[in-house]
Amino acid sequence: MLTRRALVAASAAGMASASVPLAAWSLPARTLSFPRDHGAHPELRTEWWYITGHASTLTSDHREFGFQLTFFRTRVDATQAMQSKFAAQQLIFAHAAVTDIQGQKLWHDQRIARAGFGVAVASTQDTQLKLNDWTLQRDTAEPSRYNASLPATDFALQLQMNETQPLMLQGQNGLSRKGPEVRQASYYYSHPQLNTRGKITLRGQAFDVAGKAWLDHEWSEELLHPDAQGWDWIGMNLDDGSALTAFQLRTASGGAIWDGGSFRSAKGALTIFKRGDVTFKPVRRWTSPLTQASYPVEWQVLTPTESYTVKAVIDKQELDSRASTGAVYWEGLSELINSQGHRVGRGYLEMTGYAAALRL
Image 1: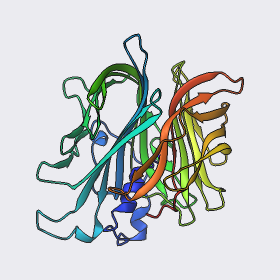
Image 2 (image 1 turned 180 degrees about the vertical axis):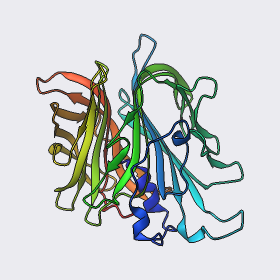
Image 3 (image 1 turned 90 degrees about the vertical axis):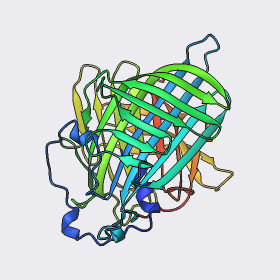
């Protein structure tokens, strides 16, 4: 969701201005259309395609990894009237990360380029994303499959992710509120429970892996309320085939400006959480030695369907993306534990606004 991540990208692209009329920021309810809405929406300011997952090696050594890859697109308002092909009208960012559980290490890399000239591409027709040698594409021969190739510094991701369930529209039929004002909203859908196979490479050592992934695609003109410091978000694939999303946007004092999410059962029954349905209560914190930011790496998350504990598999999963999006935030593989104390799933926890207030 909120990722949430691309917001961070829009924040960093300080070239984007507030020149869009306020009235244009109210997103109309509309029926999402596919495959068109798998593609980019350059008329809106901010967009991201975000994949997280967990995978294990297929050999007896049973290594386990978390992985994350995100492509962002942001419109640069100040250059929209320029006619030159060299004008940076759209910027493309990308992040990739691997959590090595046994090695207790997070590997992270990032890219940034202006769209165009075949270097950075975000197709408007389907999910066809390219940033130098990093790619994320829906397979033209197998539209239910996503292919990702991200050779990074000291690590690489080469993954195929296959749909096992229909996509999930977040909010009200894909229009997801993110604040008390109607303009704070996004178009948003998820693809949970993606069967994943491929290779994860760490410093030249390749591991054949299989696991589960989660895809979010979200696009918006405005998301953050002026009083928002940041957000906390989870996307969890449950072992029984269910899928859970929950988020809150926080003030500087830690109060919730807005919250929401969804739960879809293994049988397909969808529950959309309303404002006030979700509560995040911090349980344990970790302080980053790099930034001195204090992150809650264990939470109690209360939802209408269940009370959960969300616990990071390793604490040190802070990402320093100041070379691309300009932000520092925590994003990492975590376990989902039910009220009886049983682990029922895995997924990703994201926390922004702890190192510094997020400003878009």
